[in-house]
Image (cartoon, rainbow, N blue to C red; front, side):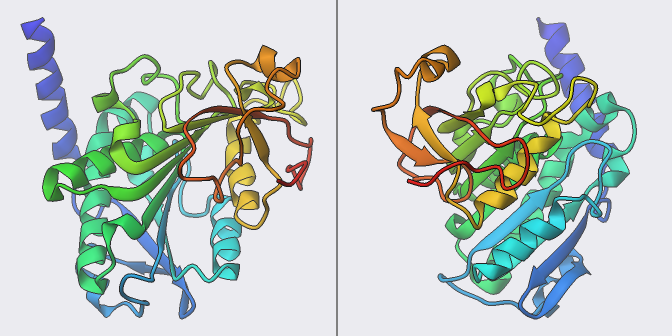
Length: 298
């Protein structure tokens, strides 16, 4: 056991040594600019709304992806339509573009860089940490889990919300909360499962866990040979939810109970951006096979 702890510590130190300031790129979108790159040290030069009324959304891609990710533009476009004052897009492709095992080993260190940017942005623009909402897909979900942990460690406070879009399952399923995204990482953590047991996690790890179409492959509209389709369906569900309340969910103990109508009278909320922040537990729903995916309203 001691040997495992020592080896784990050495690997962590090595990973932190491999991730340097400047390895992660940040891009700000708001009413004044679109995807303007900035550094942590250059935050003070950014034109931004300030103070308690400003909400900041931070989004992150997963493995073998980058700032050209197909879900970034519709996400910030939909947020701007709702007058969200700042959307920050991350690009950590320098460490996400190689072997999966390498990306996993470096993820806590990348999360540290994200945490430092968030803290500096909060300080410079006088925006409470409770106004930050971090949204990550696949490994990006765990990245923000680690960022949330770093912020708690450094500041003794939590960000307001973290949303995990089908958090990566390999290397994380069954891990303790300190080594994955967890409900402890923010004031509110919601998790969308679309490929549980495949590329995504099956276990409930948030305050609220959504299971569209059972939470596993195949998502409605994904073909048998469309590898990654179910895993990559989570971001479109989410960015649609920013401008829609069509993802109506029911609290339920299992997909079987949901399918058999045993949850029809249970508590309801919507999946995604407009979820009731007081909700807790597992929630099930069905989606359409193509956009718009939401099938109903409250």
